[in-house]
Image (cartoon, rainbow, N blue to C red; front, side):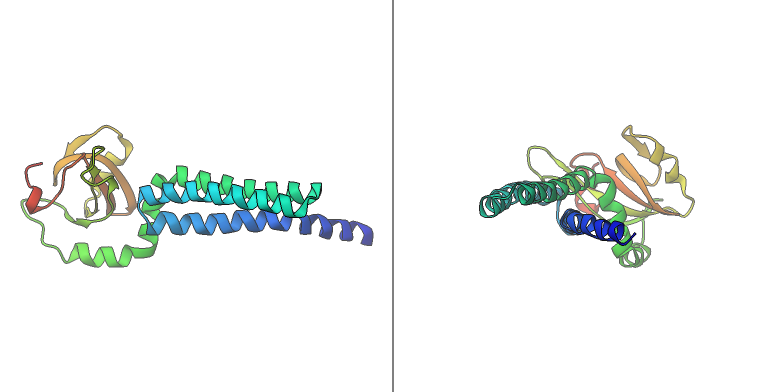
Length: 197
Protein backbone atom coordinates (compact mmCIF):
# COMPACT_ATOMS: atom_id res chain seq x y z
CA UNK A 1 0.00 0.00 0.00
CA UNK A 2 2.77 2.45 0.90
CA UNK A 3 4.62 1.49 -2.25
CA UNK A 4 1.64 2.56 -4.37
CA UNK A 5 1.53 5.92 -2.63
CA UNK A 6 5.24 6.41 -3.22
CA UNK A 7 4.81 5.57 -6.93
CA UNK A 8 1.84 7.95 -7.17
CA UNK A 9 3.87 10.75 -5.58
CA UNK A 10 6.80 10.09 -7.94
CA UNK A 11 4.46 10.09 -10.94
CA UNK A 12 2.90 13.36 -9.77
CA UNK A 13 6.34 14.88 -9.29
CA UNK A 14 7.21 13.95 -12.88
CA UNK A 15 4.08 15.68 -14.16
CA UNK A 16 4.61 18.81 -12.08
CA UNK A 17 6.84 20.63 -14.64
CA UNK A 18 4.28 19.97 -17.39
CA UNK A 19 1.35 21.20 -15.27
CA UNK A 20 3.36 24.21 -14.09
CA UNK A 21 4.30 25.05 -17.68
CA UNK A 22 0.66 24.86 -18.78
CA UNK A 23 -0.43 27.05 -15.83
CA UNK A 24 2.21 29.69 -16.63
CA UNK A 25 1.12 29.64 -20.28
CA UNK A 26 -2.51 30.10 -19.27
CA UNK A 27 -1.77 33.10 -17.06
CA UNK A 28 0.69 34.73 -19.47
CA UNK A 29 -1.62 34.26 -22.45
CA UNK A 30 -4.67 35.65 -20.66
CA UNK A 31 -2.67 38.70 -19.56
CA UNK A 32 -1.46 39.22 -23.14
CA UNK A 33 -4.99 38.88 -24.51
CA UNK A 34 -6.52 41.34 -22.03
CA UNK A 35 -3.83 44.03 -22.00
CA UNK A 36 -2.56 44.08 -25.59
CA UNK A 37 -3.88 44.43 -29.12
CA UNK A 38 -4.41 41.50 -31.48
CA UNK A 39 -1.12 42.03 -33.30
CA UNK A 40 0.87 42.23 -30.05
CA UNK A 41 -0.77 39.00 -28.89
CA UNK A 42 0.23 37.34 -32.17
CA UNK A 43 3.79 38.61 -31.74
CA UNK A 44 3.71 37.20 -28.21
CA UNK A 45 2.90 33.76 -29.63
CA UNK A 46 5.78 33.98 -32.12
CA UNK A 47 8.16 35.12 -29.37
CA UNK A 48 7.02 32.23 -27.15
CA UNK A 49 7.72 29.76 -29.92
CA UNK A 50 11.17 31.15 -30.73
CA UNK A 51 12.31 31.62 -27.13
CA UNK A 52 10.79 28.31 -26.10
CA UNK A 53 12.61 26.41 -28.82
CA UNK A 54 15.87 28.10 -27.85
CA UNK A 55 15.33 27.27 -24.16
CA UNK A 56 14.33 23.72 -25.02
CA UNK A 57 17.42 23.12 -27.13
CA UNK A 58 19.59 24.62 -24.41
CA UNK A 59 17.98 22.43 -21.74
CA UNK A 60 18.45 19.30 -23.84
CA UNK A 61 22.07 20.19 -24.57
CA UNK A 62 22.86 20.83 -20.90
CA UNK A 63 21.05 17.81 -19.45
CA UNK A 64 21.79 15.21 -22.09
CA UNK A 65 19.63 12.70 -20.30
CA UNK A 66 16.87 11.06 -22.33
CA UNK A 67 14.23 11.28 -19.58
CA UNK A 68 15.06 14.89 -18.79
CA UNK A 69 15.02 15.79 -22.48
CA UNK A 70 11.60 14.18 -22.86
CA UNK A 71 10.34 16.12 -19.84
CA UNK A 72 11.68 19.38 -21.29
CA UNK A 73 9.98 18.67 -24.62
CA UNK A 74 6.69 17.77 -22.87
CA UNK A 75 6.81 20.91 -20.71
CA UNK A 76 7.44 23.15 -23.69
CA UNK A 77 4.76 21.30 -25.65
CA UNK A 78 2.21 21.94 -22.89
CA UNK A 79 3.18 25.61 -22.77
CA UNK A 80 2.94 26.00 -26.54
CA UNK A 81 -0.37 24.13 -26.83
CA UNK A 82 -2.08 26.17 -24.10
CA UNK A 83 -0.70 29.43 -25.53
CA UNK A 84 -1.73 28.56 -29.08
CA UNK A 85 -5.27 27.53 -28.13
CA UNK A 86 -5.82 30.73 -26.16
CA UNK A 87 -4.33 33.01 -28.81
CA UNK A 88 -6.32 31.36 -31.61
CA UNK A 89 -9.53 31.78 -29.58
CA UNK A 90 -8.77 35.26 -28.28
CA UNK A 91 -11.60 36.78 -30.30
CA UNK A 92 -14.07 34.90 -28.13
CA UNK A 93 -12.14 35.21 -24.88
CA UNK A 94 -10.98 38.85 -24.97
CA UNK A 95 -14.37 40.66 -24.81
CA UNK A 96 -15.58 38.63 -21.85
CA UNK A 97 -12.31 39.01 -19.93
CA UNK A 98 -12.23 42.75 -20.56
CA UNK A 99 -15.86 43.00 -19.42
CA UNK A 100 -15.13 40.96 -16.32
CA UNK A 101 -12.27 43.28 -15.36
CA UNK A 102 -13.55 46.72 -16.44
CA UNK A 103 -17.35 46.44 -16.66
CA UNK A 104 -18.03 48.88 -13.82
CA UNK A 105 -15.89 51.57 -15.45
CA UNK A 106 -17.55 51.09 -18.84
CA UNK A 107 -21.04 51.03 -17.35
CA UNK A 108 -20.50 54.36 -15.59
CA UNK A 109 -19.02 55.92 -18.75
CA UNK A 110 -21.86 54.69 -20.95
CA UNK A 111 -24.62 55.74 -18.56
CA UNK A 112 -23.06 59.22 -18.30
CA UNK A 113 -23.38 59.77 -22.08
CA UNK A 114 -26.32 61.51 -23.70
CA UNK A 115 -27.32 59.72 -26.90
CA UNK A 116 -28.86 61.64 -29.76
CA UNK A 117 -31.46 60.87 -32.41
CA UNK A 118 -32.73 57.63 -30.87
CA UNK A 119 -29.26 56.07 -30.68
CA UNK A 120 -28.12 53.71 -27.96
CA UNK A 121 -25.88 55.01 -25.20
CA UNK A 122 -22.35 53.86 -26.02
CA UNK A 123 -18.60 54.42 -25.59
CA UNK A 124 -15.56 53.15 -27.47
CA UNK A 125 -14.66 49.67 -26.35
CA UNK A 126 -12.09 47.76 -28.32
CA UNK A 127 -10.89 47.92 -31.89
CA UNK A 128 -9.71 45.28 -34.26
CA UNK A 129 -7.56 45.46 -37.36
CA UNK A 130 -4.49 47.51 -38.03
CA UNK A 131 -5.82 51.03 -37.56
CA UNK A 132 -6.02 52.83 -40.90
CA UNK A 133 -3.67 50.29 -42.46
CA UNK A 134 -4.32 48.38 -45.64
CA UNK A 135 -6.44 45.83 -43.80
CA UNK A 136 -8.75 48.44 -42.30
CA UNK A 137 -9.97 49.22 -38.83
CA UNK A 138 -12.99 47.69 -37.09
CA UNK A 139 -14.09 49.73 -34.09
CA UNK A 140 -15.95 48.21 -31.17
CA UNK A 141 -18.27 49.90 -28.72
CA UNK A 142 -19.93 49.03 -25.42
CA UNK A 143 -23.64 49.59 -25.90
CA UNK A 144 -26.41 49.85 -23.33
CA UNK A 145 -29.66 48.45 -24.73
CA UNK A 146 -32.39 48.73 -22.08
CA UNK A 147 -34.87 46.71 -24.18
CA UNK A 148 -32.33 43.96 -25.06
CA UNK A 149 -33.26 44.32 -28.75
CA UNK A 150 -29.67 43.54 -29.76
CA UNK A 151 -30.01 40.00 -28.40
CA UNK A 152 -31.57 38.93 -31.71
CA UNK A 153 -28.55 40.31 -33.59
CA UNK A 154 -26.09 38.19 -31.57
CA UNK A 155 -27.35 35.11 -33.41
CA UNK A 156 -26.56 36.54 -36.86
CA UNK A 157 -23.11 36.73 -38.39
CA UNK A 158 -24.29 38.76 -41.40
CA UNK A 159 -23.41 42.47 -41.42
CA UNK A 160 -26.59 44.51 -41.04
CA UNK A 161 -28.03 47.84 -40.00
CA UNK A 162 -29.75 48.06 -36.63
CA UNK A 163 -32.09 50.64 -35.15
CA UNK A 164 -30.22 52.85 -32.70
CA UNK A 165 -26.84 52.35 -34.43
CA UNK A 166 -25.99 54.64 -37.37
CA UNK A 167 -23.40 52.36 -38.99
CA UNK A 168 -23.43 48.83 -40.36
CA UNK A 169 -22.90 46.29 -37.57
CA UNK A 170 -20.74 43.25 -38.29
CA UNK A 171 -20.65 41.65 -34.84
CA UNK A 172 -22.70 41.86 -31.66
CA UNK A 173 -21.69 40.03 -28.47
CA UNK A 174 -23.86 39.93 -25.38
CA UNK A 175 -21.73 40.82 -22.36
CA UNK A 176 -24.59 40.62 -19.87
CA UNK A 177 -28.27 41.53 -19.79
CA UNK A 178 -28.73 44.90 -21.58
CA UNK A 179 -24.99 45.28 -22.27
CA UNK A 180 -23.37 44.46 -25.61
CA UNK A 181 -20.13 44.72 -27.49
CA UNK A 182 -20.85 46.02 -31.00
CA UNK A 183 -18.24 45.99 -33.77
CA UNK A 184 -18.89 48.23 -36.76
CA UNK A 185 -18.01 47.63 -40.38
CA UNK A 186 -14.50 48.42 -41.58
CA UNK A 187 -13.46 52.05 -41.16
CA UNK A 188 -16.84 53.07 -39.70
CA UNK A 189 -16.88 55.06 -36.47
CA UNK A 190 -19.81 56.02 -34.25
CA UNK A 191 -18.85 59.60 -33.49
CA UNK A 192 -19.28 63.15 -34.76
CA UNK A 193 -15.97 63.20 -36.63
CA UNK A 194 -17.06 60.19 -38.73
CA UNK A 195 -20.79 60.72 -38.89
CA UNK A 196 -21.09 59.64 -42.53
CA UNK A 197 -21.23 55.90 -41.93
